[in-house]
Amino acid sequence: MTAHADATRRRVHDLLRAEEERILQRWTDLAKTSAEELRDLYRALRLALGDERDDLADVRGLLAELSRERARQGHTPSDTARVVFCLKEAVHEAVASDGSAEALKGFIWFSRLIDDLGLYTFEVYATAREKIILDQAEQLLELSTPVVKLWEGIVAVPLIGTLDSARTQVVMEKLLQTLVETGAEHAVIDITGVPAVDTQVAQHLLKTVVAARLMGAECVISGIRPQIAHTIVTLGIEFGDIITKASLADALAYALSRSGAEISTPRRTRIAVRTEEV
Amino acid sequence: MSGDGHLLPIASNADVVAVRRQVRALAVDVGLSLVDQTKVVTAASELARNALVYAGGGRASIEIVENGVRKGLRLSFIDEGPGIPDLALALTDGWTTGSGLGLGLGGSRRLVDEFDLISAPGKGTTVTVTKWAR
View 1 (cartoon, one colour):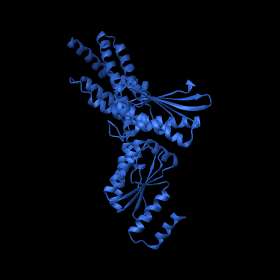
View 2 (cartoon, helix red, strand yellow):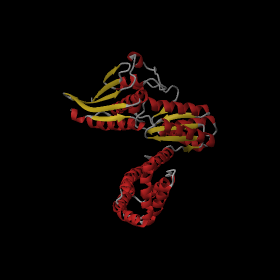
View 3 (spheres, rainbow over the protein chains, first blue to last red):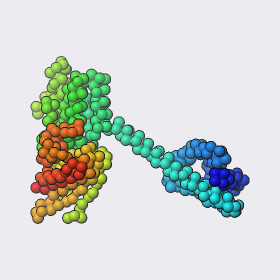
View 4 (tube, helix red, strand yellow):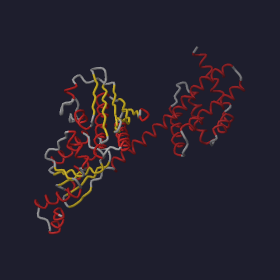
């Protein structure tokens, strides 16, 4: 049985070697691509089939490269898989003209192998896509959480969009890092851009404030709009002794007056404090 | 008005965000005030996340309902999770089997006009809430 299977395989391999130029030419025509692109792949495949160990690692490596290269050129993954499947037709013509039963049987086995390889290019494409999406998500995470300096000793974190665990983690890390670097003693977390504050968001905010406090900084949460205040009260969330303000301007005025009371600041600052009373 | 039904899967955090967006869009259509929009969106967020965290996922159905003069938004969150053995305890503020604040279920009940919770151990959980436009 195995000896028989081996014989059919060998027949296909012999064909691939004997008819190399013709099959390659036909494959190139069918796939409508350049011969250079396919020649290496064809050679690697032929060598792998001639090898007893059935080692397709080289072929897969070349296919992965082909898939990535074609994706970069704007081909769809179906296009790339079709290029691989075209080899079946090219080889089938050679098998048909050979006409032996062994070659035909071998072709069925060969066809299954090409199916696997075609699907592999799809897999490579999907993996590459996934990686791009992951990278972008990470970049977005970085982009979406700036920590800005509002005044000497006062930093602000303007939060925009959905606040999930991953983002809170980044916000917290960035805020704490900035507190160390700038020696700021006041931080304003502005949630004007957060569409809804549910219990998870509130919990994340509370944790961030506690962490900042542990580092000796005082936090003010600003941007509490009427509807958010309403919702927070109805939900039953307690912000405890955390200072909250309606707008970022209020929070800045508050932080300025607090820092003004603690450290001696030039007159300029006091002018800014007076804006609060207006 | 069953033609307005929207069925959304809840399988990841991104789905919770999608549910929230859809609820907000429909809440605007129904004519809920800004405060009520925010309340119903927050309730949807809590309940969708409950389905995700405690049941590993489920689905949400959102429909616009009418009772003669008023329009409203009815949301159902259905999961096939472990269910809730003690409903009264689950609705108690500050009680949680997870790591949250324990305010989600009870808080959601206060955020909406009608709240219906059906659950039994091993039978999954269905929460249906309705918010009427004023």
